[in-house]
Length: 317
Image (cartoon, rainbow, N blue to C red; front, top):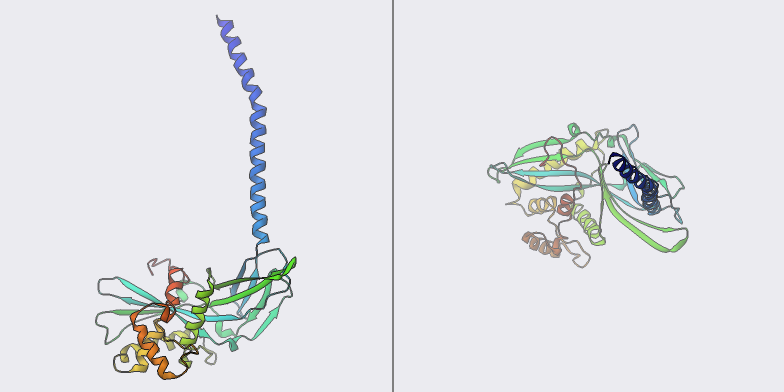
């Protein structure tokens, strides 16, 4: 009886040993398929063009660079136009502690760019734009400029203004590949040092319209003030402008218009409304809130898409 049991166990062991090479072969095959899939996925990523704008502001000569993460060569290096902004957030804080926020993007004059250096390449670093030392900025939360204030006509609502020490840069890049130079591709996006947000053609048009409306008051375009840091200059200007506009909005139409523009509710400056009277009439109708009339409030869209990173110390901001 004992010998029969031993023979049975030996037989089972032999059967199991037969399966070991098969299992090893199946494992090797699965690993090979997985490795091929990952390699193919990686190659597709490198072959697909993906532009980004890298900001290097924490250095002696601040700059930003158009970067292409792909290894697939283009027909020619792209040379897009950039729209630069200094971002701020305005918070309305209610007595119960709840709050809402608005994103404000004050445009920076393109004249501020000292030089543009083309690498001549179509991958990696493509084009570097150098800025004055006034744009020096650290990305840390401690370097955010912020101020609290109360407006006389807004009851118990408190306000906080935060200005961020970096740029939001939007662009529309057109390019073609060497193997098909006639086919023009396009990428449209806006970046900060923390993220890249793709924009639809309509959203990019909305951003252009927003920029024109903000520049309706020329002082909203940020320029250098001697050797002062431009983020300090922007914060001081914007704080004063908001307080004046909010305090005088009830009695002063110009202040009311300034307030609406800073909140992202805009009047139309399209060519079909060339005279100021028509613009003012168009602007008055924008009081109804977000609509196609005021470009769907693009700053609200960008805020919801996370253009400005969360404050790690106060994540609800």
